[in-house]
Length: 130
Image 1: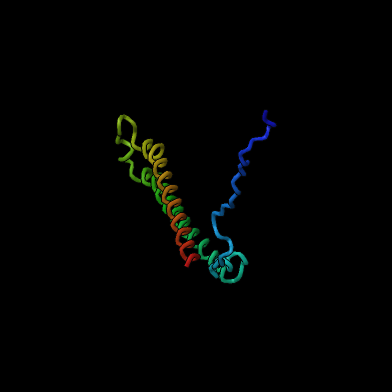
Image 2 (image 1 turned 135 degrees about the horizontal axis):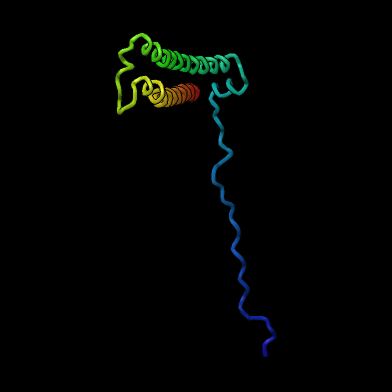
């Protein structure tokens, strides 16, 4: 008869290992410009002010182009009455110019504005990373 104990030695569970994904003990080199931005020093404020000015300049140029183009359409139609007699696809040209043309133009201006703002931000981040 057996007593319920096996004569083979019991196996131990394997010892747990600690897995570390990154060594946190290394030194962190934080560029001086990032510190200037976080502390809102005069250098950081100047860099941010420069970014805002560049984006404002681009936005104002695009707004001026939009106002000039969209404002010129009614003036053109007013002082060149021959354009009112032209028809495109059975639609009078003034209806087409004032009712259809502005929408793709506004989409284009929005696309260009977004691209320019992203370009300014990329340039800013490159300057910060230096």
